[in-house]
Image (cartoon, one colour):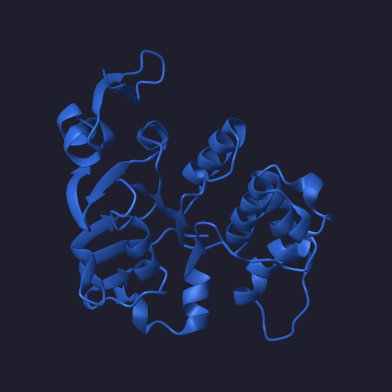
Length: 258
């Protein structure tokens, strides 16, 4: 797993006459963890789909290590980019270990079996998301949170240079939210993820891009981006922003109406 550089250049995405994303540009340097934040419908998921090549841009370009991501052969793309999508409809009739082992497919010849190295990588991925105890259970009988951890493990087993995740903490309890984001932060890979929890984003991300109405409203380190004025403008809420006395991370406290 070696980190790669991502560049999104003036990407526009439309659905009929509606703009999902309008001329959005962002960069993720090799090894950075970059967060996309913004309210529902702001364009975060649409932008991620353009990066992992599900939604083709109407204008602009996505580059991975300088090359056009949409021009990469499928096999090369699968060796380079792994994605964990929001609310995956995947319902595999397989054991958990078999699902995670699917992440090794881009690295093997057609119909080749698993090697001892593949087995070690799968074991490490399961351990990283605290799912070793789930290895022999049927995937389709897991809870939502358990499934999410297994799908993240499958992406880890893929050993991508770029990992793209849409709300990876969905369905996870607090302990596993912290554990999974800590694991992602330590990867020798570039990570681009969408998050709703601003405090988690501030703690685990090197830089944030704030999307609203399909456009970038602000970008930069969390301490520069997450201001009361921006939160009022983008989210329509009052908030206090401070530096946590122990972690040093930016901390947002939302103030209830009235």
